Length: 188
Image 1 (spheres, rainbow, N blue to C red):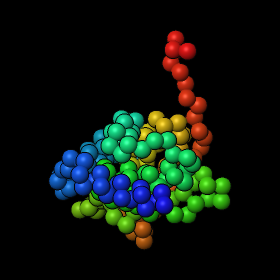
Image 2: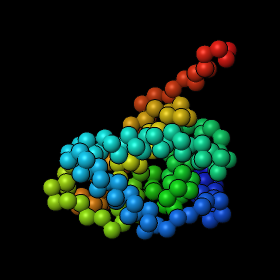
Image 3: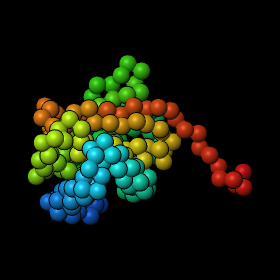
Image 4: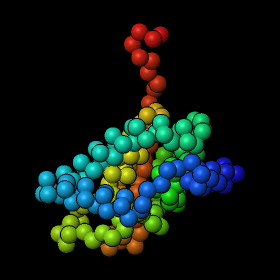
């Protein structure tokens, strides 16, 4: 029941409460950012780190917008969180809904499989980047930053990407720990 309700909420929010920009402009702008990072660092591992760091900083701020638009409260468990990410979060901000699959037996790790990825439209990786560059790595940082703000420390990393010649684009998300809410000093 929650999964269907989450999808309707994400679709409804996408249709009625999200200011949209031209998808091609968004894709090309992101491509320009990645191209500039490649020129600046000339090292694919460092570009991956910078994209993740940029994404983290975006996620820290984006969670407030997500909570305001979705009206969602605290999720009951990590499975519910995964559904909210896929069916509401990605829908609100990118207009897509990746599939949540491959849960670990302890329900602390899952995969997001992207049937479409608006960041990778019109993209061809440099020939020597195929095994090193994770072009959409900014999304891993966004998830890490946003979830940290709601007291969930996670690791997120791509394990496959159609841009690299893989059959699918898959991000693995692992719950490291639930963080304790801290009261700012002097506000006991």
